[in-house]
Image (cartoon, rainbow, N blue to C red):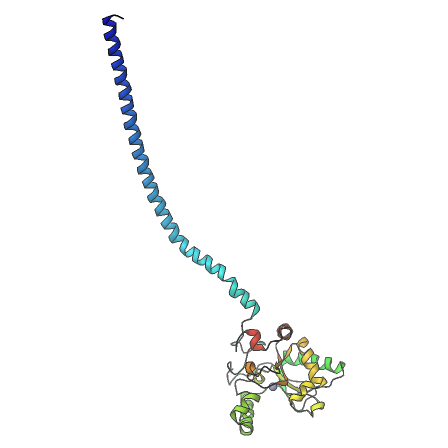
Length: 273
Ligand SMILES: [Zn+2]
């Protein structure tokens, strides 16, 4: 190679190297800029994501809460299915709960009272739906060979006041509380209760009625016609009353059957007292 060519070669190499360096520099700057943009974009994205997440969190919070409620809701609903809501406000309802803790107005008189057309120790009334069901129950008892007799159905607030006072005179307040409802706290005022007796107990209201064939028939069959023995044996602490095998309460066939099958009192069935 000649000196002139050598020089040319060196210049060419230098130029090429300069171009390569320039390209590298340009690429490096370009890469760095690109990274900057990406980082910035990423940062921006992060902020946006954070914002979105925050927003989502804010929006999700109530949703999540309502979801939690939605998940929790079936629990009380299921509970409701097991223990029904006690009806303590609709006095005209056949499932109205009346006891020592749930009273009814002194002025309440059922609108559909009818005289019960059955053997009875005195003329007495019930609401028509209960009276009709009681006729069916008495007919079933009669077919099975048992003669039942009505004793006392609907009682007004005033009549119940007199009866309670009479019991207090005889048994004192504590004694009366076990056998007689205070006025406004008697199912008899609902027109949905009937005290039933028979010749086997001298048409009286006695605990021993529960062991007579008539009393046994009522215990085992009343529910089929919509009645329950409202104050069963051994449940005084729950019902507040002594065992009354004669006191039938009309609730309709469905509820009466459920209560009979559960072996519970009305209070236990509704989970209240
Ligand atoms: Zn009664």
